[in-house]
Image (cartoon, one colour):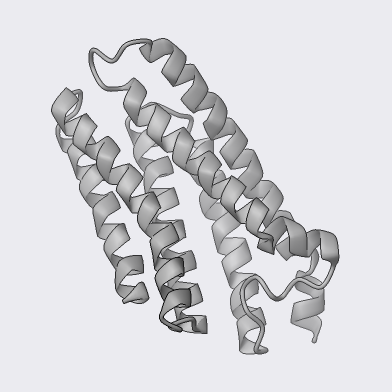
Length: 194
């Protein structure tokens, strides 16, 4: 069930993207896209909860969760850049960081380590694997994406303020993305040399 939720949330995000891209500027479509975006991120928390509740935790499930996170996050960054809402550097940074960290984590998994368990240094472990950092990063992304979409709904009050908050959160989220990737790169030599 947890793996189904992980996959389903990807399609929820694709539906949101479709509504934004195809129905450009349509307030009703954007409103639905906003709700679907919130749902896609809410399902991210649900899949982990279900996995723990029903003892469905596995390395495959962890990989599927990370894959879903990457697809949803990169889909949002790419869509926003294509729409001209953000600079192209946002998706380029997110995608590059994802390729680098996921390649290193794949090598770690071949050695029996989990994606977040490969860190040995306590500071690196905290930045990448602690609950507070993982939740903070997720919340930063969710709020950035939600505020950016919300600001584009025609007729929404204080659209400029909402946009500025969303764009500021996007800068924070992409910076956080890089910061959370650095420990994986720092400890890559140890994992790859072993």
